Image 1: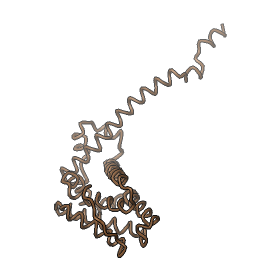
Image 2 (image 1 turned 135 degrees about the vertical axis):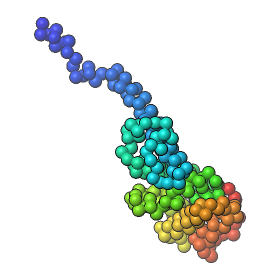
Image 3 (image 1 turned 60 degrees about the vertical axis):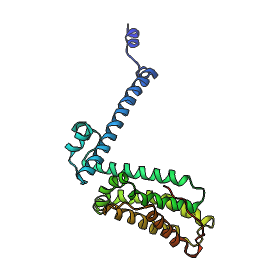
Length: 236
């Protein structure tokens, strides 16, 4: 009798059977995909509302209304509106870094990767959709930097990283013998980003010649008398 009762009680091992684990994993995977989709909808909705209202302080009700979700869904993913704002900033920064890396990877010569980085940054002002999407963050850049100093510093470092790597390669291969990768990365970043932001604030769409001039100016400053006499191909 005792033996039969013992056999009727599931052992700890049977409670963790492979079949049970697979069933749980399938359920979690389905829930995970739903939650990822919800979080992405909230991020995109927040970006849309901020662009429409030209404010970095949208109401949660506006965001969930735009996303077609509930307050419960919002707080399932973000503890506060500021946490969502950080997610929006991080999402935009990650997209920009991926874009920079993809465009720069098409260039075999390090100095051309430097040119490509500059061109990609300044041409954001030349594309109406990109300029409009960026404008809200440009206008509020100082406020956001003061509000989220750590996140801002990390974002700047990640955007600068591909440029610095290209400059280090240019020095290593003798294409920019007098360059200082650390200082020149900082100088080129502020030149390109400052120029682009000013155009966006003024709602001015620069021409291809304007973009080319900034690229040539930056490279002349980088190389000085060592700039090679060569043409540049237009394009993003």
